[in-house]
Image 1 (cartoon, rainbow, N blue to C red):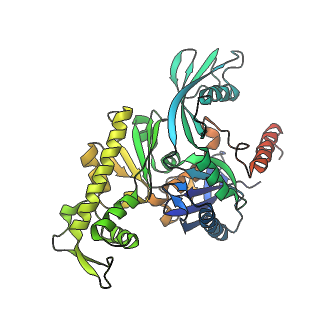
Image 2 (cartoon, helix red, strand yellow):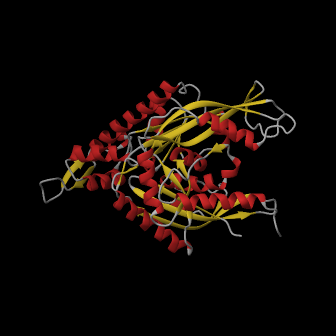
Image 3 (cartoon, rainbow, N blue to C red):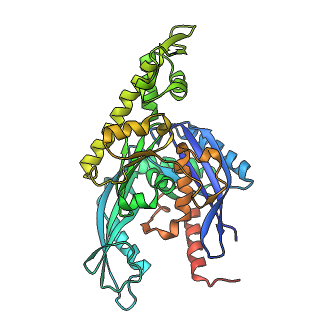
Length: 422
């Protein structure tokens, strides 16, 4: 039976839908083969949150339709990225007894994760992820994989990601309206990390920032474990808005100028270089100093880097990141971001994107771009689902498609109980 993985990345500026087929090599190793992609301008989304359900639903539908036409097959389910200022995180611990005769089982691990997620939450908040950071087996700490170990007591140090029930339900409604089930909602920086981080970076200590149009998502990884996440209320649109205000021009004009002439290293721009643009109240174009435009962009970008440094300092990780910072997302492509980041943060900074070494065949040139890191990462998240210690409870609490998702989960459970047939 053929297996497929699909991803829906719903951003402030664009919606990207990807679908791929799961393949197996002679050793049973899994990989993906790209089948199709679909991109549509985002509508009804502000700072990562649905603010107009009909508009967002229509925009998501356009991207899904384009992907299905490209792939030549219907998308039945997908991993969907989620972000926005409504996201919050915390750390928690859970415990499970273990039958020493059998050793630690996957059921023991799930019970410990269930205990960790039993935290008091505000009325309008619900858990999106419960992710194991590390395990303790009979007092032995920092165990990365306890499965099969002999023990009496298993403890987990878990990272809990929560979000607004209203925001989650609106997002679910927009996707399921097209007959697409949601395999899992995935916090976007977790997805992006799958595509852009190297194993040695996760082990040594690294922060990844997915810089979108409305928000930037920060995640910290140390010893191959997620340690901290935070959603920052800043993104590429803030840079564009500063240019629009500085030149007194429409936002669309400012966006075009930013993409075509923008740089975060204004001292490298000739003082007499000019840019022509149409401003409010005038029919003809006016000339502006390109260096002035780049000064405006640099000032905002420095502020963004300082906020990242502040958040890392507050969380106690600023001095625990030998691998530094990896910037990804569409905003990170502005020339000079990595160099400016190194100057402000005093640590290694690079721009991250999906690369040809990933277990995905057929990645197009456009997908090997920082702006598509999250969508490619969502595919990888789905491919690696069985290898992660993550407790999920996405299903019946979401109205509209709950019965369909419950039946799908039951079918998978029954299939797992049946012996394989040649």
